[in-house]
Length: 106
Image (cartoon, rainbow, N blue to C red):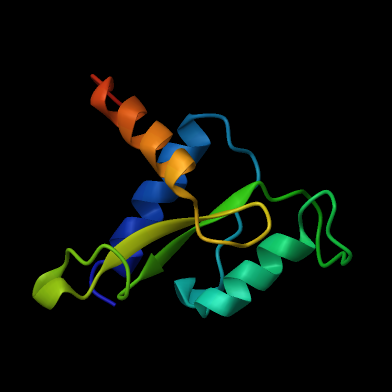
């Protein structure tokens, strides 16, 4: 996808600068959305599997199918919550409100 490498680097830097210590990135940054959801479910505190150290609170998914914005609208970003489901309206509205108050970022 367009800008995938750049987006992964920027997102990883922002997460690390804000105290996120465990950042999992699939090989070459490529993984299907259902697979990302499955990994998030397995790595949550109430998940039934154990495929690695750490607990996921959710995951950022780069996709061509949500919030398109790249060349030809072929790049988007979404957030999946702790059970692997797409973020709900309450989460996204809260996140949006917080972005309106940003004056800088790390």
